[in-house]
Length: 330
Image (cartoon, rainbow, N blue to C red; front, side, top):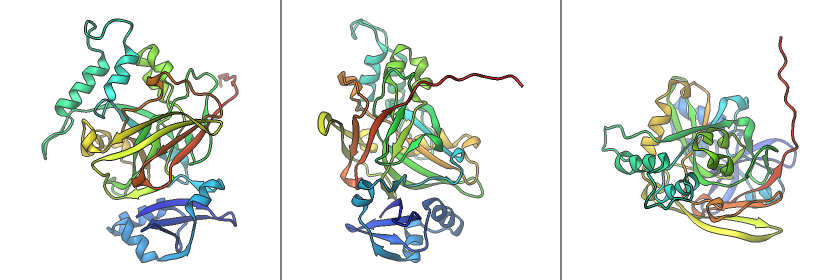
């Protein structure tokens, strides 16, 4: 079962359930977040709670998306309590593009290992620990909160000071924190972990700056576990024509870390176990248009698709106007 959130024709919110190729409104539901907290408190699966609520009239998710009425598959009443984070260098092959960004013109065979390559090798050696053991911690970054989430189909703003506006097709894990501080995973969605790769390439210590950008995930939330082998396609369209296209792989079969290991190293921090909070965690990628020399332009459209996740995630790029920020003393 997949879930979506959307705005009805009367302007009110609704939740939709998609299963067996059919989509219906979930009766009495206006928020996936509220459903998730209810399921966590009652000790039941979210899918079972949806079934108990019952399904109403049929809906057309593709039409909802085309009409601009699709919401992110989960959101928080207070966007400051939705946290977007991520881990990098987690996928087999993910180090090559990053390593190339962080090296000069030296020949790879002669140059010393970059910190990125060292981190990647640590994951290969210790990212999939035996049951009951703790694996090596991954590269980790903070991206923002609910204020930087663009709805599926909506523009992703890039700040005027950005040097690049590049996509990163990833799996996004969706979590809510229960009343006693227990993290509950709802499932996974397609994610675009939008980043500034030119800024990152200047110096890897600028990684934190390069990640403080908008992002998007959805449109559909796939309940349950992440398939071991996820295959999708990432595209950039310009004027309706594809200017770049490449397949991407995810799932543990294609990763150097287990999902459980990455989850542990995020939620081991008590800060990230505050009751009622939502966490969107991006699990990394090995596919970047930037690594192929592509420079995006305003109006370009990112399209990330995967047959296991329903509708594609599409977002155009919108560059923001420059702002003057002044700090005042009190």
